[in-house]
Length: 553
Image 1 (cartoon, rainbow, N blue to C red):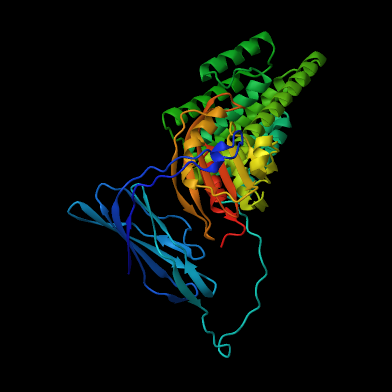
Image 2 (cartoon, rainbow, N blue to C red):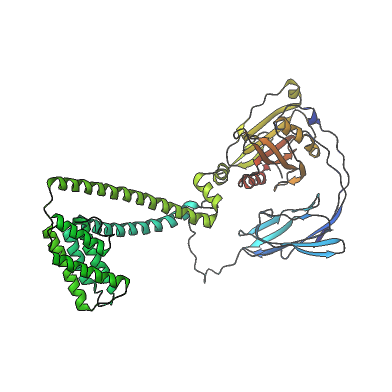
């Protein structure tokens, strides 16, 4: 175990040479770091310095600090080139007015070789503690080729970089729903066609077909007298409703018989009085079976069925032949009914399609959440930036290497005569705008002569620079920063408010800024993004983590 005892004392710095340069967008004025004092201990251990490929290394950090201090351990893939399998919960014990915190990480690597676990940053209050780097060896797994069969290496497979492949889930859900929908559609369509075909039959033929179905139903054998007489009564009423009296279905038995008597008296229906009485008797029996749970014997029930058939036959013969005008009116009526059915089919089909889409969306929302589904279907600018193919390029001189979702465009800036005496050149590359949702800027400065840049005095001018571009309510924090290749600089971060140039509304934004003085020049990388953009923080952090200075050791 290695112990680190760090003490931070007050420091003061002179205003650097760059403070005399005015008007450069990318050069931030400098400030003096606030001095502070403190005391803490940080210790690290690993359980092994040599592992087999894929095995686990336990990396442990132990911090001794005052109970009033906030301790922030490193998170994410800061142990690269080793991968973090798991970050365990912090174990905390208290000793008087001091805390002892133990944080463990499970690390691994899937390629053999010699690796170095980089120095890790631990924040204790406002202080930054750096651990020592540790060398580890990852060994190959020895394979006895005489016993273990060897296989060919599989070809590379393209993997979608999106964290949510909504198209894959979409088809897995949509295809079964479409199949179910088609099956239901064809079954219902077949049934409706059959019913429509029957509807096209004349009323008399439909009535006889209904009686044949009653005979084949075996309702009497199943002791379903109520259903039997219901179908028998409906068959007679439907026929009379279509051929004689168009309110036969909703009329009571007495009302129907009374209406038929009136039709006979007027001569519109030449039907025997005895037939009317027989119909009345059967309908009364049907009412008793439906509402009073009466159960006539099977012989009576079959006789009643024959009475209904005889009534239908005699009614057909008793109805006068329709006139030409009645036939034309009936044809017009049939066309109107057909049009209504077609409109009904279109409406039901549209509702079914909308329902299918709604069900699919509900399933997606339940699985992935509303925001993810909405952004996947309707699109989201920053989400598209995160999922696009990123570009890694070197910008400016001295060069800065950074990965971005879009190529940064050169922002030409004309130097004044005073600036030309000091600077050999300056370059700025940008994407977006400070007054928009997402903004990236990479700036480099090269001097005519050797100039020492004090990065500890940068923050002082951050507020003024942002205010000159329309920002307000600006907060500023800073800390030391080191890239994976060892380039050291100052990280400035905080929040601000701007008026969005597109929406014209107040927008709260966060910003991250890296400042370096490498290779005889000055380099600055800045990312500004809206706080309300749920994808922007990950994109910004990915950009910042990719920053390297080309010649850094």
